[in-house]
Image 1 (cartoon, helix red, strand yellow):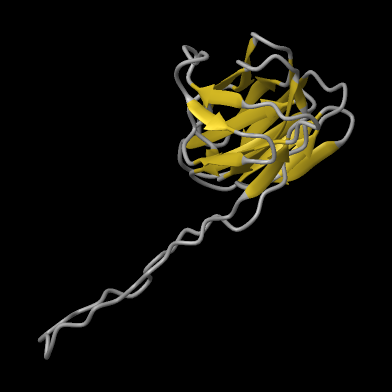
Image 2: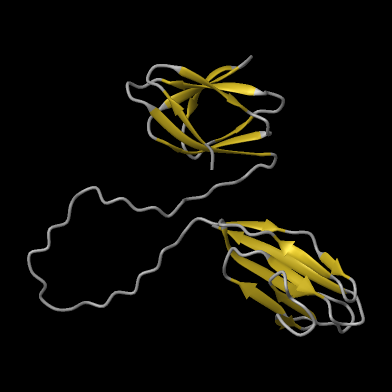
Length: 198
């Protein structure tokens, strides 16, 4: 993700070529000066709709150098709790009386990206999704009306490799790799896909 460094007490211009500006991380408080709209508070975890605004100024209101990490996109991105945990008070263990087994789970905020259905003609290969470090899972379901199977895998997927998804069957892929589909059957195949983002 892009980074921006702003000296203490100074503004720094930021070109905004996309519709939305998302602040991912910031080392301190700051303001965003939006031409024609004035200053608004800058904060990590916020997203700003900029419409036709081509430049904003990031204003460092602190006494130290400011570092921010940001992203720009043409789509609105909804954020939920990030699952981070901070320990405020230190923990001091003097003695362990007996061993304790604990099952723990980490719950991370997630969103869903629902993709358009993919129709794949006989003998054709298509990329379903590009690689994404933000994807936790890809859910694929073969929703073909007529009996037709499809192969799911990497770019080299073909009629004799890749995981088979039969009619009315599906797959869940738990990583962020690029995923391709190949139709070895004689009929068109229709796939429904959904990404679970982290």
